[in-house]
Length: 79
Length: 79
Length: 142
Length: 142
Image (cartoon, rainbow over all chains, first blue to last red; front, side, top):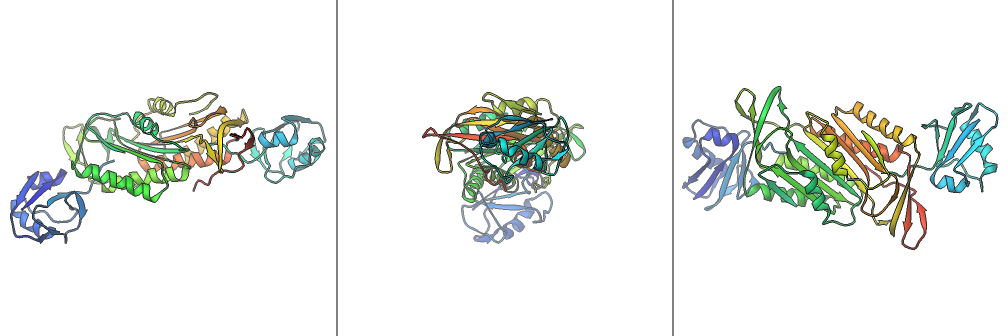
């Protein structure tokens, strides 16, 4: 099981702050992203989406494990 | 007539905080420096001596005029 | 030291308090970013700063560790606002202490650039016409 | 704005007071140089800062004008101690305000480097063994 977070404009575009995924594991972050599309209000490309797993930046090839916390968000704009 | 100031280590090495020079004018700052040597405790080379005329940096070729305020000092070390 | 602030903070008080814990510094460089009431041609009346609780603090501490490894520093202080902000309030503080000025200047700027590209904060602007928008890009830092 | 101080000054109070006169800034970079109790292998107990009254203020104002011409700045604040100083007291403050961070960072560092090479100040150190010496060289800034 994966716990998924969306932040900022991606939270609004997906229509979700958090989701739970119970699909087959391990899978890459990219595969998870495709799997989630059916739950989005509209399809969203990977472009300009950042991925963090267990609160560390990673890439779309990262192999997700049961219990991981996965976050998707747009480029950061703090400071 | 020239009003001359010495600062920091040059004040101590020349033995003077201020001097008045009544030699022939115009003359260059370099010529003035040579003329002043007789009033120093010991000869002092131009090396690493900065020159300011009327409170602006200048060079040893600067032609001094009657009434000028001439300052000689070592490289600055503020900040 | 890294802190997140739900309320307005005084950058000078944070700097002074941190400096009181340090010895041997001869140089302190600091940066404070504040909210402007103007962006991309529009008047901005307020801002909301969203972040990723948990990841934010860890990322900022990692950035400080990177700076401490890269330069010879005696201390670093980073503070960042979250939540609702009004114009002229400070958003971010980075400050570095070192024996000599070169290290403090370079590390302070590095912390800001690293924070801008890596710390999980997102700004949402409230415009004077009542609409809201997410800030999409950062101003170049170099 | 440029000021010389015969007594200990609070850099944060000067920054805040100057900032209160400004509008539209989003970035403030500052540097504070403080007296260390250690230099070139020796313990330093006190310092005297000599300057060239008259030339000092004019030089500092010229440096600020150079910075304002070279970068798009909303304000600059420079302060410098003169006279007798004890360890940990601030010696110099440079601060710059701009719309975006690049200009503030670069101008603040420029002011310090220009001041280090052009402003007529000289430091005389009092060592722990009772002797005095003139500081002969600056630490490189870049």
